Amino acid sequence: MDFQPTLPIPISFISGRYLLFSIDFVTYLRREHNICGVLTGTLPQIPQQNVFLGLPLELMPEEARVLVDKGVACIVDEAKAHQGMQSLLEEDRRKYLRELESQGLHASRIFAERKGQKKAETLKKIAEKKAKGKAQAKPQSEESVNAATATSEPSAANDEPASVVDFFAGDTPTPSTSSKGTSTGTPAAQAFHVTPATSYPPLPDPTTSSELIVFRPDVPSSYPLFAHMHSRGYFLSPGLRFGCQYVAYPGDPLRFHSHFLVVSSEWDQEIDLMDIIIGGRLGTGVKKGFLLGGPRQAKTEDGSEIERTESVRTFSIEWAGM
Amino acid sequence: MSLKQEQLPDLELSALTKLIDSASASGNPVDATTIQVLHNLQHQHLWTNLQIHNLAAPDTSNDFPPVRKLLSGIPPNRVYTHPDEQLYMLQKGIREDELRPERLFVIPTAQGQPWSLRRMAFAFDALNDVEVTDDVNELKGPEVDAEKSKVLDEYYEKRTEAIATQEWGSKRMLLAMVDKGMGGDGTVVYYVVQEGEVKPRQN
Image (cartoon, rainbow over all chains, first blue to last red):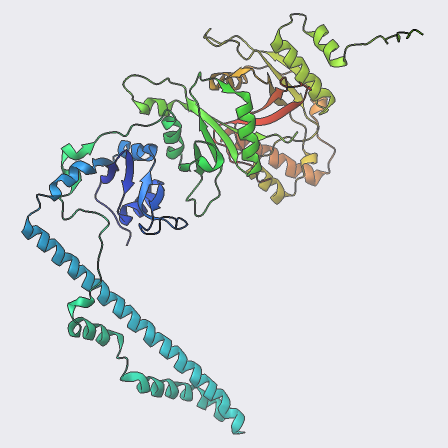
């Protein structure tokens, strides 16, 4: 039932941003790897409509790095990958377009089928309602014996809907026949227009070509703390809203309130005590903790973040109320 | 006519200034901050059995000035209860004032004092080596009937267990900060600091 992609998942690297264009990958990463990202896509004609955003999903460099380090994803240089677009054979192009059309047909067929089913269901409901109304009206008009009405009710209910359905039968055939009818009888012009969100196919899968893969996203110095929290099962989202680096949720953000405002610091980096108070007070004010943490190990030349992540220590801060 | 100059009264220093002067002859600012927080805990928050703990110098000399002193004392009321512990207490019908008082540690700091994760970690690590001399009579809870004391014993047992597994949070301290900035009115603010990721209270 749940979509299982072939790993690694390609993360599109476009002008310095990490993007995902496939809804299957987006749901998979959220479900299995606690990565939410931020939906950034809007309508090209009405970009001010930003309440409900859609694909693509933008990932923080930290999220991309965590996925790469876990071997779940790889970073693909999309500009390079799309250079092959011009050299696409005419034949391949046609084949791809035909494929899209057949997908559109399939989609429209399913849509029609659903519509038919829904219609039939609604009619059935209306019929049942009518039958009930009549059955209730009967005993009121004819003062018959209780036993007689009791037996007549179910039979009436059975008879009535059948007659109503018959009445409309010519108009709406049963769902199974309707779907067949539309698919064979209607012209191909009715096929839905499919706009694929990704360009593989027609381009070859980029994860198979090593030259397209860019290794290791560059991450800020707060990455060890991010990776530490992520490894503890927290969902992390950008902290702009609370003036911190990350907001940490103990589960999917749709189900849980967040627990921490996360701020990272280097081991010997000077912290203004006032910042601890500001964070602690704000956190307590919004029922969260202020989490200050960082790696004991200083950043080294070779940039290995794994050891740094293992050396992370964190402190949770709340107002004492005194 | 000549204006007569008024005789000035003999102005005295505040009690706190006198205390700081007398108690920290070294003139060390860390000592002065410690005394000021101690004074605040004792007289504003009515803590008892206050103690000052001198910490050993850190191994590395690049940390200057290090955290040199911790305070500890017994607050009149519980300062912090972990949310899961609170749930347990609610289920068992235990009220906070039925529990025996507990010693809590405090890191004294002053506004503008340089701070870092290393210092915070040093203070928490030092907690393992701090020696406390407690008067047993001071740590007695209020008198309760036999049934209640059985429930409380169960609670204390569960608590020891939960502290070992860090289910109810781990090491915790108060971070006290003295206002030394504009005006420097001597306000002291307190924040609960806990090691690790401890979920917030739902106040």
